Length: 195
Image (cartoon, rainbow, N blue to C red; front, top):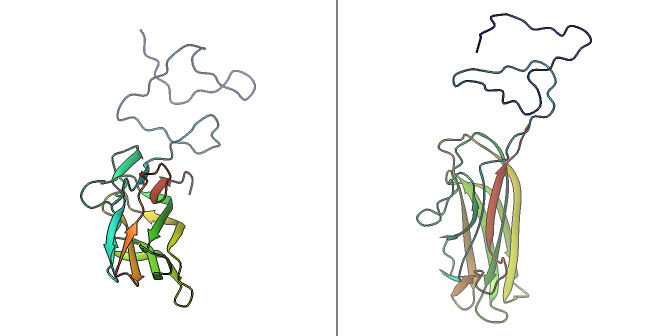
């Protein structure tokens, strides 16, 4: 195998240059950098890290108490960035903009018990998205709330967590899990390419 030392390759005619033939493997060694100052075609990317988790069974929460929703059932976690056993948080290892989606179903234990339900997500402990359902004069028993938004993550220390809070006549509530086979309470995200 020989080595060709040149600073520039130009096509002999036309405007196309082909490197190798069909079936060949072109290797870029470790430590090398490819710089693109033109238009690229045929290259892709991955929308990762990405995750999708659910709550496996019902989680009881106390009345008027902010409670971490314990998403303990991983369906997808491409880069092992979601903690489904301790902090129940997403800490992506790649910087970028992320599309976040989440939903929570809350049960107030009995008909006409649900006064107020809040479901929200925090980034590093600070509120970034929230939905509040207030039924002070017409209380239901159960409600499903969803959140969808885009957030910047630094790829190292930024993390997201989900919380629920209920004001219930019964003094308690239940974050509905997925034991009946439906995705009642879920949380997911993926990195947006090109954003």
